[in-house]
Structures are given as C-alpha cells and as structure tokens.
Length: 438
Image 1 (spheres, rainbow, N blue to C red):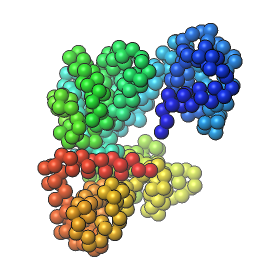
Image 2: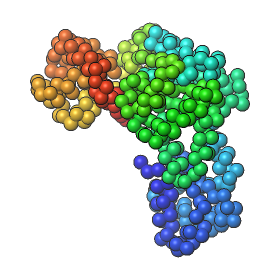
Image 3: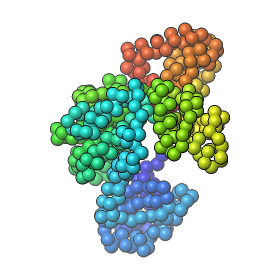
Image 4: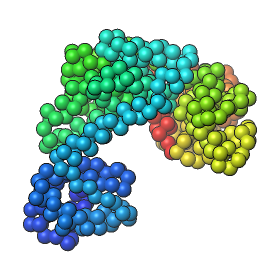
C-alpha cells in the first residue's frame, strides 16, 4: 500500500507534465502532505504567499493529478500552521471521542471467567492512574475485548480529569510515526513531546515494535520518561512479552514490571451474555434459544458475536425477517463473505498450506514427512483453539482420524510452543494472518 508521501511524490511527477521544474521548486518547496482521508487530501504550507498562489493557480492541477491516480474526485485542503495544529489535535482526539461515546465502557463490557482479571485490573488503573499496575499489560487473541478495555479506562479518566492528555495509538502507528519523522527531517523533539507528555498512554498491539531496533529504542526511552513521571501506561498484545522472540530484553523487562493479565475466548455462558447485552444496546431482545444457538456457532471471537447480532438486527429492521436459527445461519454466511470474517477449518488449513508451502492433500492425507506432520499437528491445534469443532469433528477434517490422535497432536504442539520460542512465534504469526484474512 502506498504511503501519503509516495502519493505526494506521484502528484509532483504528474504536475511536472504541465509545470516547469522551476515552478515546482518555487511554489511547492515548502508544501508537505499531511494525510489522505477518504476523498480528502490535506496539505500543509506555512508560507502564506505560496499557499495563496497554490490555492489560486495550481489547485486544479493537483486535483487533476489525483483523479489520474485514483480515478476519483479528491478534494484538496491547504492548511496553515494553525490549521495543521487543529487537524493534528483532531486526529489525536478521534479515538478518545470514540471512548467518550459510551459504547466502550466498563458498563458495556461483559465480564466472565476468561477476562475477569484483565477487567478488574483495568478498573483499578482507571480509578487511580499511575498508582497501581504500571504498566498494565493485557494480552490475548484478536477480537476478545482488549481495545474495549483501553477505551473504558480512557472514558473513566476523561470523566475524572477532563484536561488530562490521553494518547491512544497502535503499535504499527508508532512505528510509522517514528519512521516518517526520521525520513521527513522533522525535529525529533516534536515527536518525543507528543508521546512523553501524555498523562495516559494507551498502546494497542505493542507486539509490532518487536524486531524494529530503532523504534524499540525510542519506545524504551518514551516508556522510561512516562514511568518516571508516574504517568499511566497500558499496553495490549496478542501474546505475553516472553513469547515475543524479537523483543528487546530491556522492553521485555519493563513490560513485566506491572501486571500482566490475559483475556481468553469467552466460555459459553459469557458468550450468551455478550450476545444478549449487545442486542439490548441495539434495542431488541434476543431469546435464550437464539443466543445459545449463536454462541454454539461462534466460540472464539467477541467481535464476531457482536457482528452477528448487528446483522440479525439488520435483517429484522430492513427485510422484516423474524429472528430464528435460519436467520442466524444466513447472518453467518453473509459475514463469512464480508469483512466480518468467520474463522472456519478451511480457512485455517488454507493458511497452514500457504505458510508451510504444502498442498492440502499433504496435510489432510497420510503423509508422514516431517513437514507434513508438523503442519498437520499445527492445523489441528488451531482448529481446536479457533473454532467450535470437537475433537472427533476435527479428526474428520483430516481423513477420519480419531479424537485421541487429535488430542495427542494438540498436546505435542502445546509442549513444543513452551520449549521452542521460535515455533511459538510461528504459531502466533499464523493466528495473526488468519485473523487478518478478509
């Protein structure tokens, strides 16, 4: 995917077809791209004279270039210094505004055995930021409510301390922000001020910084600055620090300073409660029968549970379809074809084939080669973990193997993950790929 900087370079190349190099250098040397959001491109030019001339003389050329690139009409917005500051402030406030909407609060978070510790720790942090569990490190697979807890913490703290500087960012966004700062030649002190003056720093998917040497070093110093100032840090990840093979030891130690709390896939009773709670938020009642039916179909992802409820409500409101098991099956089918991805055994096996570079019949068949056996056992483990299939049903996927064979494979994978960090990292990478499949 092209970055906004690449897009701006393409636009300048397109402008050179109509304008001389001297004109480009004269009028655009102080212009920088800020962001591309939907059908809007934001540029920053601090020079009033040049900004006015670009607006009056060259805006049609820029918009024509954008249309050539995207085959769509893109509106161009030229920002002065004040406009840039307002835009950046707006960007930083977007996640907080979502937190303040009331959708992601502790009241709307359904607590069960699989997430009780994480929720209790998050509440303690929200009640006394910087005093307990600093940092708070919440880990677990995608779609289990980690981001919800981050938003809930921010919602409470914003209510108690309206002027608090709350910073929410994803791990990959921190990386991109750092790289862009270095590449653009912007003052590093601006980057550091942005992060190190936060009262509450929330970082989602911190695992992405692992293996990025310079970024890890910058985050290490950011962490230290906030921690020493007794500012609250909350991190989420898809795995605990000790399973991040490429994480700097200094960061691993610091991530473990406070409290580590995991979130696991919800048990049946919690899944039913989540479904009924989401239905109530959307203004309708979901019967125990239907909630139980959905909960039996989706076992590993809260986001998918909530997405199913939304789809059923759409059927009810837009198509007049009664809420029934047939409607649930249709919702699940629709979601499996859309961005609201449902994990199936076929999805897992396809990813295993791609990752290990094997054919499907090598994994499902009788091959006893080392690679085939390793891939087959990994696939069995993931199917059991990420879907609702029983041991017997999982065995049927692999040519009718019995449940004891499946259980033995799962046990071997779990032991190998504990003994071999590199293999554990491989399994985590496969899960991440599966969760990101559309």
